[in-house]
Length: 318
Image (cartoon, rainbow, N blue to C red; front, side, top):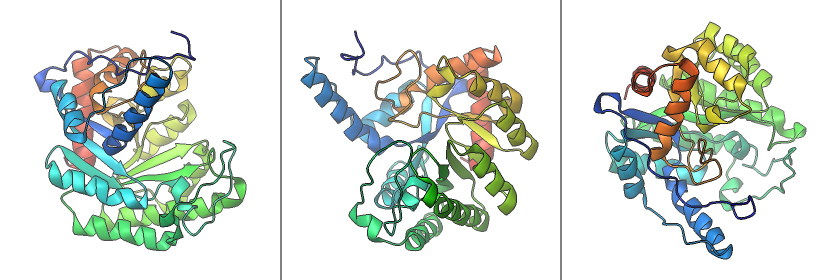
C-alpha cells in the first residue's frame, strides 16, 4: 500500500505479556484516541478503504488489559483536559492515574502570547486561551490537591522549540519553571516534554533543581543527554520511537541509563511502534515497544516488562 493510500486500520493485538510481567503505560492520552481514530476512519473511507472501528475509553482500556497492560498514566495537558484525565482516574480506580499540567505549547497561547515556530503552523487560539497562564497553572495546583489519590504526576511540561518561535521561548521557560516549583511543592514526579530544546531543558532543571523523580516522556535525546540524565538520576520513558530505524541515539540512551531508569509508554494516539508507524496508537500497543526495548538490552521481553513495572512503581507509587 503506497504512502498515499497508507493503511489506517488498527494494528493487530500483540502477543499478551506473561501474567507476572504486566505493565503500566507511563504516558498516554486515552480520551484523545477516540476522535483521532474517528478521523482516521473518515480518511480511510475518503481513500476508498474500509472504515476503521472507533472504540470508547472503556473498550480501549479493556483491549490494553487483555495483553497485559493493566494500567495507564493519562496526561491531561490542556486546561479543558485536566478534569478529563482526573475524571477518568476517578471512574477507573487502580487502572487510570492522572498526570496534569499545561503543555509547553499551550502555556504561551494562554493570554494570546504565542509566536509561530519552525513548524510553520498558524497560531490558533481557543476560548480557554483567554485565561492567563498563571490562572491555568493555579487550576493544575487546585486539582492536584483536590484529587491526591488520582493525580500522581505533574506533566507534561517542559519546552518545545518546534512549535514555538524564539520570541516566546522565555515565556515557555518561565511556564516550565512554574511547573518545576509546583511538582516540588507537592512532592510529585514530573513528566517532561522536550522537543528540539534539550540544552535549555537541562539548563533549567539544573538551575532550579529538578524534582526528585524527573521523567523525560517519549525521550528524544542523544547519548550525551543520557549521560547527564544518568548523573542526576533522571528517568527516560520510551515510546514507539525507540523502534524507529534512525533512532540509534535513543536506543543508546536507554543502555546508558540502564533498565532501572527506563519506563515504557505509548503517547497515544501518536508514535505507534514499528511496524505500525502511522496508525492510531493505543495502550494495547505497549508490548510492541517492549519488544523493541528487549532488543536494545538483549533480554527477554518479560524481563524488560518487569523492570519497567518496578521503575513505574518506584516513581509514581502506583
